[in-house]
Image 1 (cartoon, rainbow, N blue to C red):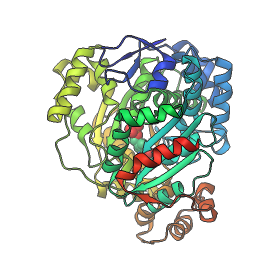
Image 2 (cartoon, rainbow, N blue to C red; image 1 turned 90 degrees about the vertical axis):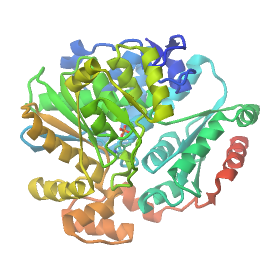
Image 3 (spheres, rainbow, N blue to C red; image 1 turned 135 degrees about the vertical axis):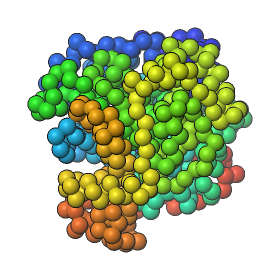
Image 4 (tube, rainbow, N blue to C red; image 1 turned 135 degrees about the horizontal axis):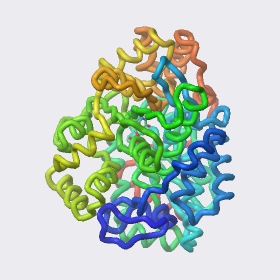
Amino acid sequence: MKFVSTRGVSVAQSAAHAIVKGLADDGGLFVPERFPSLKESLNDMLNMPYPKIASLVIHSFLEEYDYDEMLNECEKAYSLFDDGEPAPVVKLDDGLFVTELFHGPTLAFKDVALTFLSYLLRRGSDITGMKDKIMILVATSGDTGKAALEGFKDKEGISIMVFYPSEGVSDMQKLQMQTQEGKNVKVYGVKGNFDDCQNTVKEIFNSKSVCQSLKECNTVLSSANSMSFGRLVPQISYYFSSYCDLVNSGDIKMGDLVDFVVPTGNFGDILAGYYAKQMGLPVGRLVCASNCNNVLTEFFQSGTYDKNREFFKTNSPSMDILISSNLERLLFELSNRDAKLTAERMASLKATGKYSLTDLELKQAEKDFFGGYADEEECLETITNVFDDFGYVSDPHTAVALKVCFDYKEFSKTSNPTVVLSTASPYKFTQSVLKAVSGKTVKDPFVCAQKLLEETALPIPNQILSLKEKERRFTETISKEQAVDVVLQFAKEN
Ligand SMILES: *Cc1c(COP(=O)(O)O)cnc(C)c1O
């Protein structure tokens, strides 16, 4: 299978090239030339363990990779999740299910892709004949940095450096990154906010002199952000596995339509669901759940994407995003793969902050998607209510999705069963969750976790408990100006 750019100028490329390059030369995102169909394999999947479903899904796009090796790597990656299950489905009520994607090494759904990405990159660079060492640079607002560090630690031929805003992440997130283990990792706090971090990393990527100096130590930069097809493709698998679980439990019959509700930021997770649907999975609607930064809600209701609006910092920080990069891949499909039009829309987004769909495209989008949002109060209320009604503890991101799920069911009168994707452990956002279920506030993150355990009986994950004992290896904070130096120094050391 070849890959093309959403902005179309580049020629079709091999899968390995798309994985290793991350972004197309024309600035567009790589998309598969067509969608492989797995409709005929659905019945077989009912009896497959997760790694087998995953390798089937991933290999249908990445045919140049060796299938047996890929299956082996999936087994390794997903053995890092509790009980070897990266996507267990929990039933809350008739027709209402939650797929929990947070049982991995860092307790966020990004683990599903990032435990596997190092293999895709490393083997991809072998296939393309690239001999250089890869240095992954990440600017993070919290979850991605830690998941990438865990995913790349001690991997041959790869090193990783993470920058986080020194005052912009939660205590638990900071501790998770500062205590990171591994020989090939480095973490710095950067004075400033997330945008400062992100811009610093972008400037390094775009700097010819930095890239030249790195080349002298046989090193190339790569990114682990969600625009990479390697981040997207492992996420398609859990839509298939969730569906199969519902058939196996007798909650649905093979062929029944299922709706999925997805807490959305950069539009990667929900786009993977759209891809699953294109591949023949019986998906009804994909419900896009946002917090107060509800630019996507407005987009699906009006057909106009407009990022000229106030930015809110919320309890669900991984969804605090005004430019959802992966939406570009959906625009490409909605326009019947019109790369010129997609490029024009992206140019318009850059110049004016907005663009619009045609009426026909909006109609098409409405068949597959519904957009809704929950504000801060509704999010916390939902954590409280869902705990009272179902005894289920949800983190703020999942609570946003649950609220939108209830709204959607009422609005659409649909009888389709609904799966809500749960993207983070409540213990990653302990303060907000404790407040919602008990009204209590506790400052120390570990005491807070203990209190949440007492209130809910939900076990504290080992990943949290063990943090207390770990050495804080990376406590240095640097200024933006120092970033280039630490990158070059790190390249020399590796
Ligand atoms: C990254 C993240 C999201 C948003 O996912 P996208 O693929 O960016 O839409 C939602 N919830 C949590 C906890 C996350 O870490």
